[in-house]
Image (spheres, helix red, strand yellow):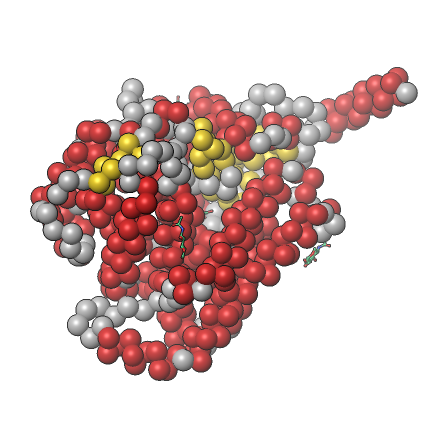
Length: 493
Ligand code: HEM
Ligand SMILES: *[C@@H]1O[C@H](CO)[C@@H](O)[C@H](O)[C@H]1NC(C)=O
Ligand SMILES: *[C@@H]1O[C@H](CO)[C@@H](O)[C@H](O)[C@H]1NC(C)=O
Ligand SMILES: CC(=O)N[C@H]1CO[C@H](CO)[C@@H](O)[C@@H]1O
């Protein structure tokens, strides 16, 4: 029996090495350790902590090779690009997302993050104004209200020792997103809410499992798997909520509009994303119900987990760096004094150090370490050429931790963002929101909501933690496994 297996595997290896694709000489060099036939697939196996370690090593190889390296899963080739100029060039040349994003289509359909280029071009143009500064200023009241809620929710943890603040930031950003995207307060309906949040968490892990188990990449096999049945159950809940809200909103669209304008006659008009979509669909016939649902789902998905994760890492990092925390507090004291008043538009422009701390947080822990595009034409990079038909992973981690930052690259140093001379010679060193024309639609929204949240949080509490104990894993986003817990105490007025 053993001999038969041996002979068969030898034959397989023979056929495979004969069949193996010959790389072009301009193509980025291969990551070491490829096996015949399966390529590097074996390196992807294991848990998401291992996957993150592999991802970091791939970036290291990519730096060494002058900005790009390639690896393969069976016949499929993936490039890993870490050079910021190359990242930008690919972003603007190949707008089509990679096949991997197809996995999300069952949930997000043709929302911006997953749509094909022709649909994306039209919808992105329609939706850009929905995140204009005027719309965002209309959200300030919501952001302020949410920051008050977070401070209040955290009260039970004061002086109690270590706790997992992730639960709080996730809860809070999910609520904020529901308020600004769909115009609903989920505290009003606990049952709907807990089901929904569990489904969001679950779909993330389902997608991640599918990405890692390469045999589930094929729809044909996937459709027969237990994982697919789990996905279907999840999707039912995930799709239900926005449809339910859409139906309600449509019914009282007219009434609501009038009420809202009366209520906010003084300040900028608060208009949830859903209302903008409804207007576009009623007045210009721009979207049908399904498309509205897909845009809502996409905003919820793209917005809540990312923002909550950045807030979580920020609190840990600030808690681990007392001098940074004191500098934040000083700045807040200069702007607000002893006052617990709301953050205004004018205040935001004065919170320069807090802005730098947020940027450094996103550099230090790249929440969205990779984005993936389909290479739909040959592209010449600084040192290499990428070939049509392959996939490309552009790494924000690779940009943020690039050796060209200099010897302090691995230090948490918000000050570097205050002094342009201390930044590397490229324009695009901050790539957390991706780069180019298909970058994050919610970038300004995210920065504004996070600043408002933190500006109140750090006025009320002093945090402590130890980020050096942190163990991370790579799901769709970078996430902590352990070592991220913090303690909080009240600041004396
Ligand atoms: C700190 C928070 C955030 C981070 C780090 C972040 C990061 C990103 C990244 C890296 C992409 C590109 C994804 C890819 O190409 O695969 C993206 C796209 C996107 N983000 Fe964000 N995001 C954040 C917050 C938000 C928020 C709050 C919203 C909406 C309210 C949002 C909406 C979107 C949308 C709609 C896209 C797709 C854009 C397109 O393809 O045209 N994001 N985001
Ligand atoms: C999360 O939010 C719900 C209501 O939206 C609230 O009842 C619950 O206590 C919150 N949990 C935490 C840990 O803050
Ligand atoms: C898999 O299932 C989905 C629906 O859940 C269907 O649209 C798709 O065509 C199926 N694919 C294959 C190859 O069976
Ligand atoms: C490994 C490698 O070839 N690196 C080169 C990439 O290109 C830059 C300039 O374009 C060179 O300085 C590197 O040596």
